[in-house]
Image (cartoon, rainbow, N blue to C red; front, side, top):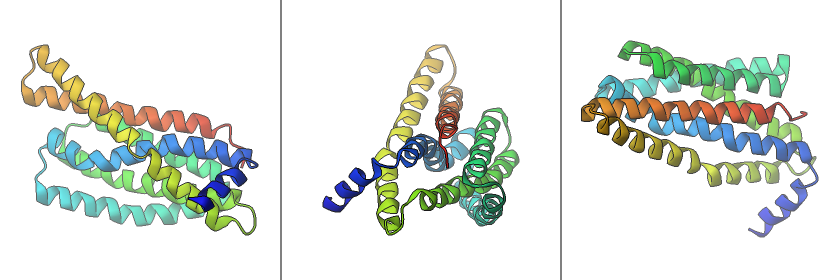
Length: 209
């Protein structure tokens, strides 16, 4: 904790890093929400059983590897900020697609794209920490990055869960069956993921890498 305190004090002298961290805390919450609720979304909206969900996770992990490679090339070519913005935009498109699709096959396709986007967001974010860290301080800055990410990671899922539950109750009060109300509540909550991603992207715009 003493070392972390020293790191926080040192980070105050790096305005652009702190602006980036604020953006990261918000868009990363959107990514965590998508990861945490992927299985629930698959089960509730598309009736996926355990085997299908395991296969879905394997597909996402496989495209995750491809995404890290692709966005590594993009970062070398376009820089961290522009590549990260592309990854967040791709993730936002996936989230919007989740609200619109109706079939399990479409969910698998979106999951594959999400794997690429999530890998891009996470890998380029780590790369940008390296860009901002001063010589001899990279381990401390990565530690601060990791601690900050874990500290905020409950906010997005908490918002999602609350929205899904309250929306489902509201839809049920309007006369929908329990299943339809739960599905509608999930679709409302899914949109909150897009909000986190878009707000984080907006803050990223002001970061000078």
